[in-house]
Image (tube, rainbow, N blue to C red):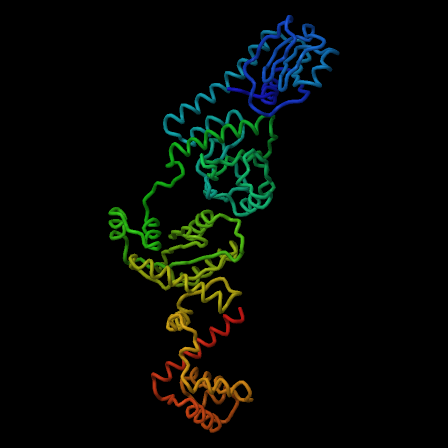
Length: 506
């Protein structure tokens, strides 16, 4: 395996009093050491040389990224330090002892690389690969997928605030830092050190062959210093992890056939496989569910939808959440266990939506899973109607907007004016200039279920005055409010006119 000068320095200083100076490359290009021979004056690019100071030439030819390990100090080294990386062992040391020490370093890293290749040929076990790598870093390692779920970690673990306690996910605060500290962090190719919840973490993004983001390798630096060469070692290990995820997609935890997949298929109106139909028939029809349809309040969402789904499932037990286009769809088991379960459910969902800056529509309860699509549409329409009528809220129940949805659908795509009775147009014209609104009078009377006494009180007029006014309205519109069909048509039209006025203001 190729190394660089920083790795050699970090390893050699454990045995020798060594100093590093001169220009150096971070790339892993150095092969095993060569003895410098006095008859040669060329130091070749990407070569590692071992020599004693008294045998070095005065005016050598030094190529780019040549590295020299030298025993003993001398004035001649000033020339070398300006042109190449010099690892100086000041104290007199056994020449061949240093040579073998460097060989041991290369052998250690060769063994690590070989063990990773062997694991790629076997099971591609990310946990084993992390355990094999931790001794090089002497720090905990974590591997996350593109949904910011922890797929694997090395044997040593720390209680770190940048991870959600007792969770398989990166904490929401850490994710926010990851996404906002720099533009497009999920597109960066090189290792980077981030402060997640004031804890330093070395991160390397993982990509597939099509250059799509697949996750992240994290090295926990809490209480530790970043050693020379560790950034390039982390990048090399990340390349092995990416290959393992490509060779064995099961390590991403994507291979399970679950009720969530069945629900997703029903929502998308996709045909079910035989296994999915069996799973659906065997599900508990006594259980009660609701569907949630959630969308971000922000135009440009930075938190990945898959991450939101995972957090939702963790915070709300008995739920299945998945992304659908620009929204999140979730099905929650709300089978009654305690008297206040509906109230607690509402509070939990409202808190989650506020935390994640989402708005949510909630369907009616259902127990027949074949009706998943219907209740998905309920939740979707609840959100759309709720945002129209109560945009400052975050949680909208279909039961509160069912009538609104019926009114919208009853129009059949035509403008509300298409359904006006002839007399209604005359009433609207009357209201434009008159001090008394006939439409408002009609609306109040209908809302009070034709109770003239209650309607008169709301309008602050005498009951006889209201009777006379309604008589004029009925004659003007050529309708009879005692006729249930005419009254229903008028109620629908008034509600539709209100909705249209709201949409025009939007």
